[in-house]
Amino acid sequence: MFEEFAIDCSSRSAEEIEAATLASVAAHRLAYLRNFPIEVDRYTALLSRLGELCPNYAAGSTKAAYALHEAINVVRCRAPQAEGVERVQEKAGSLPMHSGRSFARRRPLYLAMLMADPGWQGFEPGRNGESLLVRWGDVLAALRERHPEHWAEDLRQLTGLAMSFPASHLDEAPSELPFLYLPGTPRYTPVADDCAARLPQDLGRLRKAAGEIEGGERWFEAVERFHAAANDPVLQQVYLMRAGDVVIIDNDRHGHGRQHVVAARTAADGRTEVNPRTIWSVNIQ
Image 1 (cartoon, rainbow, N blue to C red):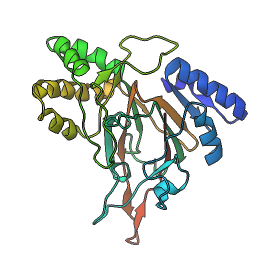
Image 2 (cartoon, rainbow, N blue to C red):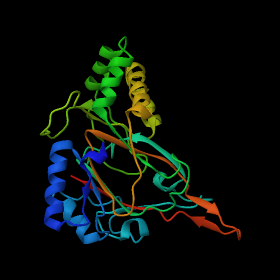
Image 3 (tube, rainbow, N blue to C red):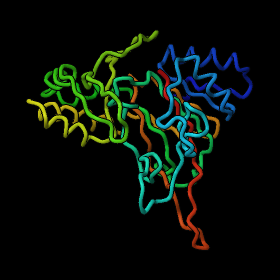
Image 4 (cartoon, rainbow, N blue to C red):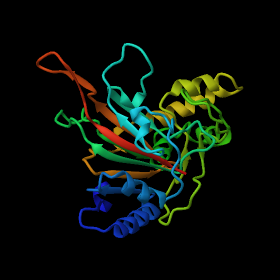
């Protein structure tokens, strides 16, 4: 899919890149840029044309993950820690499909990721931290086809029951939207099953919330079917980001994830080497 509308920035001016990016987002609700300059000012200037850049999770912190720019969350790999909190993005392994800040009342409209350093990409396919993307509308269509006996009731549950669940690491006002809802923006190219979803990485948070309301068990069954379909490789787009690649997605309409990444390894001399993979992640309101 990305090959059809990838934007090569190597021979374009900043104005041409901006125009092409805005056109792609309007038409497809996402954009894929290649050979974009790995420069903070250029990156944030482009993204600011899409909306307000949200402060990162710890704006003002002196920690390396947050110190580059107040709106940029720097995602790096880390070696396993004996103690202390590890961000899930920093760990080895994969990330299931999810939507950005699914818990929050103030959710970003767009997510942007720039690959500043691709790190180690010489492993077999599926172990290089390949990025994953799924359109929630494709998940909805798959559920209708695969589970006709549950389809009508699942849709009623997922669109009709408002659900709040707290963040695992942030103290913010929770959203009270249903699991599925209408996207907040129109799209220039209408598609079937256009919908938005609130899917966190950790289903345990939804299981706990469902246990606290009447009828929650049936609602959670519908969530589990949606989650299983979203993580079916048949429905996913897989792409390996190179240095200078930028992906911008509509956070209402798409989920994102990651295949397995090797975060650290032991060198011949016994030292622990850490994968230098680095992504600049930005939320846009």
